[in-house]
Image 1 (cartoon, protein in one colour):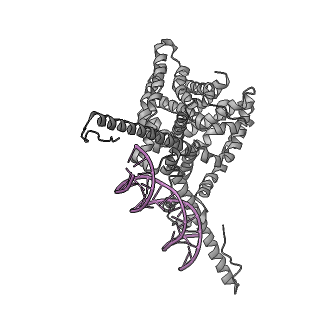
Image 2 (tube, helix red, strand yellow):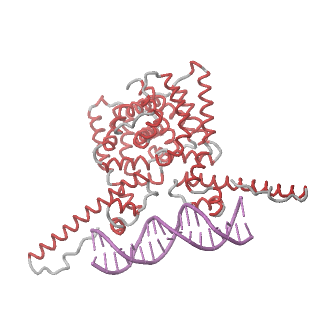
Length: 236
Length: 236
DNA sequence: GTCTATAATGAGATAGAC
DNA sequence: GTCTATCTCATTATAGAC
């Protein structure tokens, strides 16, 4: 991100210096606001249609800027994609770590059901909250997880916390193999994301209306995953 | 599919008539073989990179034909996609129906575990079998299920059998709501497909090699889904 | 049925005015 | 920082030769 070089201009008076700095600050502020609008628009477009089906022109139109502006804020379409994906990882990771720490502090309270709930709920809450950008991000993640080509770009951002949860599961099932634990955690994540990605299918099969939010599925989803993990690790 | 009009040519002798028909048959044969090569190539390309990322040129190159040939065999890229998706539905549906019928014929043998196994195993077998085109198709389905934009094109082909399984589950849990049954069946399908789509993630999390085939996950997958359904319908 | 050639459109990226 | 204009390249689809 470049800055307007105020230092190179000779300061002839305090006033002019003050004016220059104000102008610069305004430009930077406006630039960051525009940048956010571009990232938000990209997030919505990528979530709705996928990386390959979206053109930079569409994103520019959605953001209300011209093509050149998008080019200024990100060098390539791929970099734009990665920026969109990366900027929301921290809040999710933090929420999951806090819930895990709370469970572990409670000592005997550590259960499969509690672990699954702690891992799934932050995502469900963001996906169901009032921020449409977070909802778009949730849909984007649900879309790319089934595509190794794109998931490789965020894997390193999400796997550390997933491994911490795997360790917690291992304290409950010390004899379980790493492979089974990794498989079951992956199935849990897939189930979580399919709640966001496949709500249309659910309502199609049940011939009922789509419930309002992914959070409405929390109970059945957590029961499904926790019950599945326990049954599988109990040995059929 | 057009045919070369042999009737418009005057038949001067039995021999020439015979020759004409032989030539025609050969042309048709060659055309169908080419058509299959195009569909196979499209199947592999769509499975590997997704609909939007693949160009018709790539498909033509993969099939070893020119651009015009692909255009001759399917009017548009989208029609080609739909043809690829539709041509393998029947064998899968038949296999699932046969297994369901066998379970129901066994009377008391009907269990959640049995139903889940019957629904999941045909796909796992095709995805793990010797035919690379079936493996590509399995990957393609796993890719598009998380994308309503494409899944709508095959939904009507798969949902009838899914509804038959839902009915079977309902005989085991008469009090369960349609919505819960649809949710749990959707979670089961998502789990199944993620075994094909997320094997790289599983091996990444477990720091082990990727097992040879999706069928290797059959036991843990069926236990997970069956245990999850039972736990969820038991009410937490 | 297959191929070559091309039309028509849209893509990503960037240089330069403001 | 933003915008206009354009370069370069790839795309889908199709018309017409063989």
